[in-house]
Length: 463
Image (tube, rainbow, N blue to C red):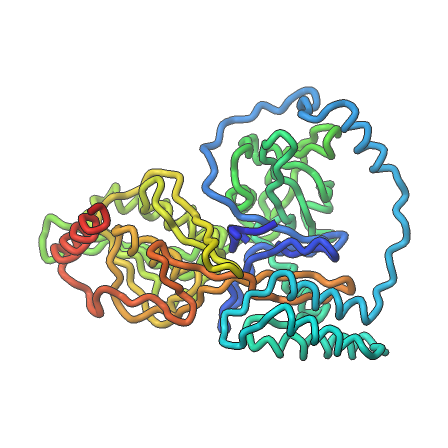
C-alpha cells in the first residue's frame, strides 16, 4: 500500500514478500521515522491519510456490531483461523539477496545522475547469484554493496538489530501500529497491524488484526490512523479505553490499556506587539512534526486568536521534519478547501498524485513562515504549500532541499532495506529535492508589505 504514494501519505514497513511501504522523509541528521512498531509476528504497517471527520459519541453496543460481510464470508474466515499453519520456509542466503534485489527492481526511484535501469539491474543480479553464498554475513554484505552501487545516500541496508530498534518507534503510547484498511464495500476501517510484544496494548489483550472502533467512547470511523494515534496518547501512567472487534465476525470488547509513553509538545507560542498598537502578532515555534504537533498547534492558534492576533508567524527554522502526515495536516489548517498541499511523483514524472486540502482554513490572517537551511522535509512541505497557495510569505534563507520519500522493507531474516521510492513536488510543480525553497524576503518585512505581497500573489494566481 502506498502512502500517497505517502509519508506518508502517507507513508508501510512490510512483512516478507508483501512489500508494503512505510514512507519516510529521512534526512541525514535526524531520524524522522514516524510509523513503525515491532509486531508480534514481525509484520508492520502504518498508513497516514487525510484529516478525519469530527468525532461523535459511540454507545458501546450490547451485541456485536452487524457485519457487512455475508455469513458465508464469516464462515470462511473462521475456518481459515483454525487451520494449523505450516512450518515457515527456510530462508536461504541466495533468497535473501534476491528479495532485496527484487525490492529495488520494483520500487527504487533513481533521483541522481546514475541513470539506473532495470536492464543493468538484471545483469547485476545474474552476476551476484552466479555463485553460492555461504554465510548470512556474506549475504548481508552483498546486499550492502548492491545498494551502495545505486549511488543514493538514503538507500541502505538495516541489520536485524538496526531494524528492530527502528521498528520500536511508538507514537501511540500503548505499543500498537494502526493501519487503514478498505473493506469490500468501500468502507474504511482501522486495524491493528502490529504490536510491541509485551507492550501495554498486547499485555491488556489487544491482538493483531483487531479492528479499532472507539477510543474513550469516541467513535473512530472516518478518522485517520494518525488522528487515532493522537487520541490514544496521554500522560504516562494514565489509562485509555479502546473498543475493538476481533476478526470479521468476532465479538466487540472494551479494553483498558495503561499508557507508558508521552510525546513532548513541539509547540511554543507567544503574543508580540507591532509598532502599531492596534496590531498584535501571534508567534508560534514548531520544533518538529510529531504526533502532537497538529493538536498542540491548533490549541496555540486558538489561544492567540482569542488574544486578538491580527497576524501570525510560524517559525520552522531548524525544524528538520518528522511525521510527513503531520506536516500535511498542519498545512491544511491554513489552506482553502481544494488547495493542493503537495504532489508526489514516482518513476514516471508525468504521473503526479496530488494531496489536496479537504477542509476550510482555521485562520485567514496573513502569515509569515520563517525558514533557514535546516528547514527540511515535512517543514518544506508546509512552507511550500502555504507559499504556493498565497497564504504565507517565506522569510529567511533557502531551505535544506530534502524532498525524497523512502520506504522501509523487512526482509525474511528480520533485517531490512530503506529504499528511495518517490519525491515531493510543490503545488507549483517545483522539485524540492536538492533545490530547497527560495524565501520571498531575507529579513522580516513590514506587515503592510506582507499583505500586499499575498494580495498580489492571489490576483496573479486567479488571473
